[in-house]
Amino acid sequence: MTRLAMISEHASPLGALGGVDGGGQNVYVGQLARHLARLGFEVDIFTRRDAVELPEVIDWCDGVRIINVPAGPAAYVRKEDLLPLMPEFGAWMACRWEKEPYDLLHANFWTSGVVGADIKRRFGVPFAVTFHALGRVRRIYQQEADEFPDERFAAEDAVVAAADLIIAECPQDEADLRELYGADPKKLVVIPCGFDPAELEPVNRDEARRAIGFDSDGPLVLQIGRLVPRKGIDNVVRGIAALRHGHGLDAKLLIVGGETDIPDAEATPEIGRLQRIAEDAGVADLVCFAGRRPRCELNRYYNAADVFVTTPWYEPFGMTPLEAMACGTPVVGADVGGIKYSVIDGATGLLVPPNAPDALADALAELLLSPERRGAMGRAGLERVRTHFRWEMIAADVGSAFESLLAGNRRSFDAIERAFEGAIVALRQSQELSRPALSAMARTISEAFAAGAKLLICGNGGSAADSQHFAAELVGRFVIEGRAALPALALTTDGAFLTAWSNDLCFDDVFARQVEAFGGRGDVLLTISTSGRSANLLKAIEAAKRKGMVSLALSGRDGGPLARIADQALVVPSQETSHIQEVQIVLIHILCDLIEREVIGANASLSGLTLDEPAVNLLREEMNDAIYAR
Image (cartoon, rainbow, N blue to C red; front, side, top):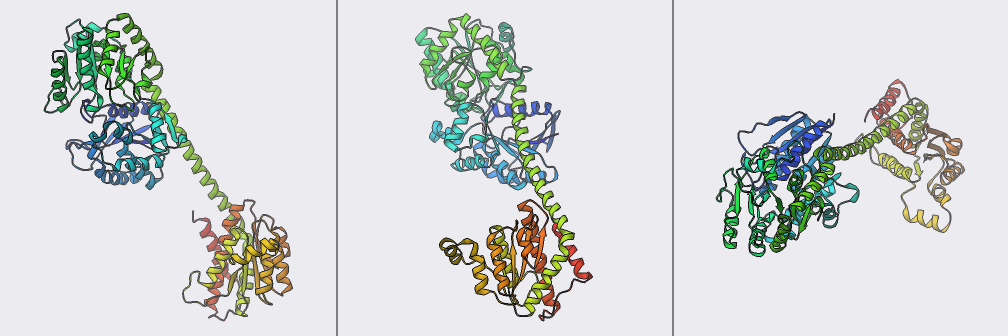
């Protein structure tokens, strides 16, 4: 079973809807978690503890728990002010994660994304994010009214870069992520919000009206959502006024939302602002406020209305138009964001510009004066949402995206495992075969040092780096402090000579030429190669033989010509270049250790090295350490 951690720092499924910070994200997180659990995910929702009575863990429904994170005061904090609390949120979550890890992380909103990016960095878990709103888009439309800190922009950039999967809620959201944030298109997937048929369905309009206490047969326009200025409810009030004054139609506007069940302008300042606008526009008698309503009652409100209206300045998705269509109620919506994706203009409703009350009045008049048109649009809207926007379908799409992400992560883990296993096999195969050759090489090099001779080392590519590494360990020290420097020279370090000679003459001679210059009788040449077929190493050995030097070869595969012409050879029996290189660096370290111990054991006399039983045991320990160091 896949364990999923969802972060929704300010929007808990338990939160009251309709207030300043309680809306679509609360519904999204709760519905997605519930439906993912039905698909087999085990879901924990991490949200900030905002009330003292909340326990740490709540078993919410089958397969879903709500984890209330202690970060900041156990009281309401505006989401605009939450960023400073996120380090505490993340630290607490990380401590819990260490004891109870998850397979996947899904952050909701940008501040949750900040925590998610840090959790990914700490634990390497696959990381998905749904932003629900973007700071740069918000700033374009709200300008100075946007009270989020400017740090939001850089934080969102970092979250976009860190995320492995970004769920855009509509095509406009995807375009904004690409154009304003440079999001990698390969990370993006468009998956909208949804509705639950168990919550929302068509019912008799008259019965619905009686249930909400609306007894009139006259036209009813409905607005449901958070009561904040950007939702454009003032535009709807002015549209109702334009409908009265321009079209001679009186339609009641019922506004559902707010901080309290009973409408209260002090608790919800937007109510007071809208009331003043209604009075100034001459429609105070047409505008009614229902306050905050429990979700179980919303089906009645949607069904009681003739038309549902939502005209925000911008909208990342907009869940309420879907919910209205799920009840067979046509929608007049702003031609922005997700609304223009969910509402098909002229088929399931009408789209109008935001902040255009006259255009809104024209659209309302068109629908209110034509019951047949309203009915056709209502049926079309119902068919559309049932076909494309049920939560079970949305969750299946999100679940598939998550499984693909996990599969990619598993492929990565499999590749890591294969790499480790390949290296271990190569080490084990080399363990027994290498002992005689290592013994002989260590003795040869030690005896040369004892006689005042030196070691020359060369190789190409990664082997060039290994040559320098080996020389540095001998000239400096491998483990034992205070021992004498040992005369080892890597022939791969003189860039001026290497490039000049290979450019002007022949690359095959770059090492042979240096052997001629620096080598002498009794010196040792060590060549390092993965294939044993490098022409410049073969020529270096030929030059060493002419100088009376001893030639050694570290090679791979079948050893190649290098192993056959060298005086001594140690061959790693693997066909994989990477594994040959991995074993060779272990062999080099063993040689360093053996030679260094001989320096100390012989009190710097370097009288010779013999692999007695302790030395054999040392070899075995070195190889076993390398094998089990994974």
